[in-house]
Amino acid sequence: MTRTLRTAALALTASLAFAATGYSQATANLSKEGWYADPEIRIFDHQYWIYPTSSSPDSDNAGKSFNPLQTKLREGHVIHPVYLLHTSMDAFSSPDLVHWTRHKDVLDVKNVSWAAYAIWAPTAIHLNGKYYLLFAANDIQKKDTFPGGIGVAVSDSPGGPFVDAIGKPLIGQFHEGAQPIDPFIMQDTDGSIYLYYGGQGHCVVARLAPDLKSVIPMKDGSMYREITPEHYVEGPFVIKRNGVYYFMWSEGSWENETYGVAYAKSTSPTGPFTRIGKILSTDPALAKGPGHHSVVQIPNTDDWYIVYHYHPIGTTGANQRVMAIDRMTFDKDGNINPIKITKDGPGPRPLPKKP
Ligand code: FUB
Image (tube, rainbow, N blue to C red):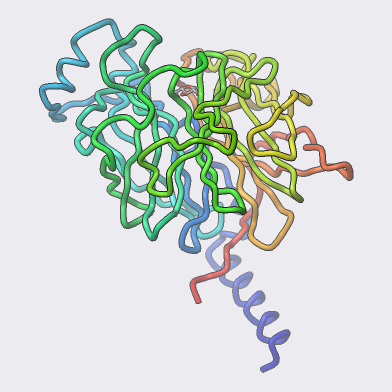
């Protein structure tokens, strides 16, 4: 069989298989997976993976045990009761953006001795033959002196279990006003590894050592560089397209309809970044406060998908957040077109199978 004929035959077989199973009408509607937020999408090992924050307002920690430090941290000061429930996170994998498998508790405080609650907003990377999850824990505030901040966990598999790689937070205090939450890790084309992070209205970029266990100086010798654009609140994410760095973030309040995603562009991964405009906003018919997103590029194409969370219309709880996927496109000048929120998400987008 020629290569073209074989490709056509494979495509026909795949579409027949979808039709036979009723999958042809299936869409990438992620809201049915339940209460999740801050989803980060990646492609690992021929599968899509999503790592979200568990955002259930009504789960519990029944039967869960905590070490003495975790117990002290959980009892030592006033903590939002829902944050105490966030002690682990699940992941989801899919071959096609439509059929998702849930992987329970890929990161759990039982494997991170200093993390006691508010396990939030992970970012994932495959490096050195291992899979890493960077995450926030304990929601530390400026004056807090107890452990917390951004941690690093490692696993041999994208489905975990992920285990603390350092034994303490990688970033355990505020720098340049940025709360150490909402990490996003990116390896640039020259091999440099950058960590973008920050809540409470400040965003910082730092360079990480190849083993991700420490912050190393950037080219100008600085360790933490503030890159906060106008209206930035939290949830940084960066993509590179045609040599341009697109820095995106969430602004407004994560608890309500003011939340949304805006972006800036630069020819350098460390900025400067000037806000261009908002690309994801509340649609009163479909989604309230969409934000804290991530983006995936389909390999060898200029096709992009954005994954984000929103509050379903009619809900009032701040933590009632569900995930969604939609297409992200660019105009002829390389600006991001406003995202059109769809009711059911896009159709299947299978990844090439393992050779
Ligand atoms: O999900 C917990 C927090 O809510 C995240 O850290 C913020 O970005 C907001 O989405």
